[in-house]
Amino acid sequence: MFTGIIETIGELVKIENEGTNTHFSISSKLAPELKIDQSLAHNGVCLTVVQINGAVHIVTAIEETLNKTNLSDLQLGDSVNLERCMQMNGRLDGHIVQGHVDTTGICTKVENRNGSWNYHFQHSTELSEYVTVTKGSICINGVSLTVVNSGEGDFSVSIIPYTYEHTQFKHLQEGMKVNLEFDILGKYVAKLMNR
Image (cartoon, rainbow, N blue to C red):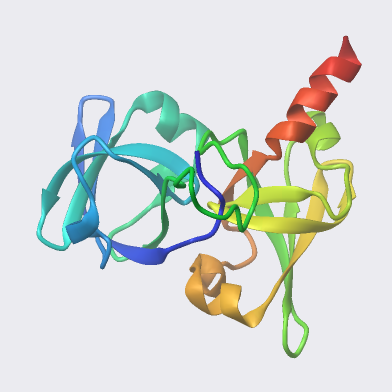
């Protein structure tokens, strides 16, 4: 379980394919504090730490994960949003995030608002019911954000300078694929209403 509050940005330093699996080696200041078998969100995807070598940790993504997320698009040198799982005795600063990506979306527009940024995204229209609540929560590449506007298959969010500087959003451009996790409470309500 995560909160969508990014702790640090890691750098992808090695990609190794083994059968249908991919091993990612990521350098970050968090690595020395990690433990083997620990859950860690990578761009919002919960992966298990399988090895630690100094300032580098290694995780493995299986075929299912690679097919459902943007991890297969990563290249050497790319930045990765990192968040350790939340502690039960801590504050929930973002919202409840499982680290289970629902789908991917495409960034369709980036607007510099002279002090903030608006990002617009498209996704499958069949999932629109999960993003219909304006001012509701959504997780984009592991970042907990508030929906500004939503429509059939699209929505937008606004980013403050701190989030822009301390996450991958400063590198996000039109046409790039992002991981989307919809609000768990919204998903449960939508499922109950559809019964």
